[in-house]
Image 1 (cartoon, one colour):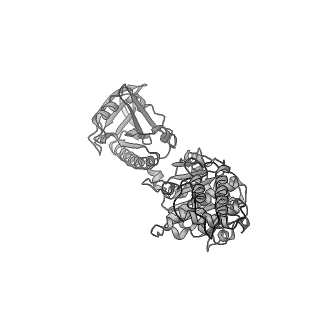
Image 2 (cartoon, rainbow, N blue to C red):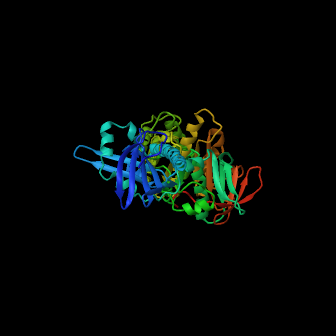
Image 3 (tube, helix red, strand yellow):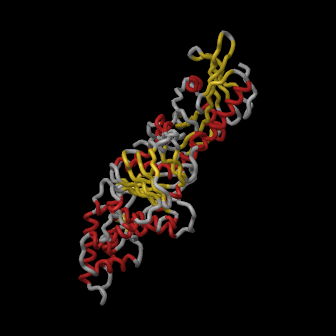
Length: 500
């Protein structure tokens, strides 16, 4: 069919024919964007056409794992021969119908092109967190272009795609406002959106643990959408599901959330594998108390040895203590006994203690529009080991943040769903007090926290007495919100974007 004059052209006809009783045409422009037209005809007259545009990328890396996190339909095409395996990632616009009138058709095509470009930008940004390279087919080598465009089933595959996705990339981006918490609705259906800066020190109380976790998930998602990296300490092992899209798109629309269900980039950290208690950041007095070591010289010996150099294993630390020369300050017996205590710590918790953690990687902001969540799975640890690991990681992040120039924005958020296990109200534990002290200084160092607890009195008063936001569960998703200096108001919290 003669095609109307369109922008981003010229549009070259690649295929014209019939497929499943419908007349179909496939076009490509100089940017290698594909346009599929499925015509509606009455007798011999064209009444309208379904239009869909495709942006094509050559993919290098784990395209399959990335594709599974997307809340929309894409086509992943693999071409293999005896020399190489090529992967093509095909991002489609939302299919749209237009009457076959030049003004209508041109306007609709322009709109689709704009939305596709916005969506492609978002997809490329998010893909960076998955170590996946997406290169536009127009910028790829000629042999890769030829391999794609000579696919014999290309036209029927594009013409019959099921198009299950209801939101465009442009709508997603348009509704991600930097530095905002999208909470939900008031009872009279007004949308509640608050600045992220109001939630730098947030506590969620009352209700069932699942209700508190839902609110914390909503806060975490909003931080990630605001490009604020989030570190989740997970006692249940369930928070990794934040990387998978939920299935509540229809419910989200009822809450006036114009973002479709979404899975977020996630980096998993497992104690003893890619994360440990950094021996160079331990609190010697706190360690002595946790392990019930009554000897007053043990923490002094531990501190003295640690201050002399870096350690990458607990065996190395024990050996250094044992080989320390005796002095008037410490006897040979005291040194050897301290070395044995340290060795027993390593035997009790094999793999838990080690050298420096990848703090820069955990809090890495990246160039993507959506930030990455780092999830630390604590489900395999007892309470003491969990506490030591939380202290080590938070201290690493805190010391790193203090070493950087001060900023007026939050770059990382710490999420503690069961905060009473780390910062309880009892004042006797040195490690817990140290964690609370660091967290109280978070905002002035570009950090924030969101914590959960059944009752406010269960949390260290050092934190609970100085909060920027308090959220109390009334019933399920019905909550009371009190921001510092403002009156309490009620909100029906929106559904999560990710899988819960």
